Image (cartoon, rainbow, N blue to C red; front, side):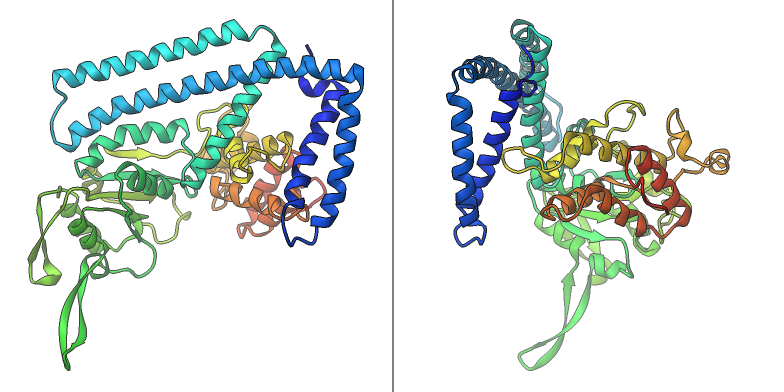
Length: 477
């Protein structure tokens, strides 16, 4: 059977149904100036849909299509449930290890058996999913339909993940699973990567949803001092007298309250603090920290405290105010240092950048999973973002070299010096388009982005990348 939308009457009925659903939402918006117009349009669409479905020939085609559609949707939903159940079992197994880590011990024999059982059950669910597809997916059209339905379900999940602050790609899940046991013991974590790669979002997600506490967040930029981070004395008026009172800073608050602290862009923090941080990174819950700013009075570190630090790559001339972290400081993080790559890292130039595309779609999808941009537009802008990210990160492999000048390639420098269509920039651009009510096109939004780039050579490279994907074809930069 042909794909649902490939049969004219089905394609028309589907389009009318989608438009009718949108129109009904507007008509229900009490007080909206468009409500009356929508009510009239709703009636016209309902008449049109009835005419389509009541025609005897159309009715037979639609009935067969709906039967096939039901099989596709049931297969997709059952497959998705198996995927979710598999993840749940894997999370249970990881939770057992995390609980042991929190208690500072290794797994006992009973726990090892439980973990083995949970992982075996998860593996069997994966096999059941494969068997389901072999049994139900008998044609190429049905396969495409199941994949499209699964993509829609994944999109809705991705939308909810973004609302919680982080798209859980394979890379993010891996870092979370591996780092969590150490974090629960109070060991520090270092996240390295390029700008806009979701390092801070990952640290916040780990703090809120994995460790279960709202973190203290300290930005490394500006003239922040060691006393501002740890605490300082302030003069206050009490009972008609002026007294000096010690006020804890975010680091001490996190220690005493048993909460994580995020040191954002730690390599932009003052050298005086980084020297003290060497010692602080060795402390664990239960230890006492002597506060020099408060006459050496000790603060007992409560369970739940952990330091999560982020740092931009140390690329010359790219990030202002960034100092190279000492080997001593980096070593304090031990094996808990993770490089956070841009989405789709390792993907070939010719492959579809699925993570960037999912991020863009999830950022503008409505609760039903509908996206106001076409699949073709999303894929093109996702590929442009992916290429810019790889060129910015220094990828000079096949396909990317056309965007890197010979001089930069010889010097081993990245193809983009300061600017990139990073994940957060991609989200901002598609949200601007989606939220404009049709007033701003994707091409126009990308043109505005390029015009805002200060570095002249970067503007040229970004224009070349965007034109390679069919954007800015009538614009000169």
